[in-house]
Length: 146
Image (cartoon, rainbow, N blue to C red):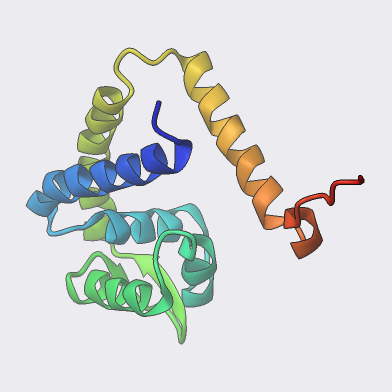
């Protein structure tokens, strides 16, 4: 059996590749779609909100570039300095994208029960928490007493 890191990397690459292919019709990428969802989910969304929410998914320059792209493509607008909002057209287009994303989610979870999905997410959350809260002494092997 391959280790979990192998499957995490392979799954992320497969999700990104296939989502990018699917979203290309809408002139979006997975990361720009994620940005639009952050903007949609929060009133008075700021660039900082997007950067902090999506920092596990991409580095700052990639996110900033994607923000610029969704602005230039008319998906979003700036109602004030450093603030982001979807345009009316962006909201309508994002609703159409959601239909395709829902179909993609169904495909990607074929044969996986809701309980299995929730278990997988909970396990990954715990693993992440364990690693992110570990100290260097937690990672030091215990000395053997002779």
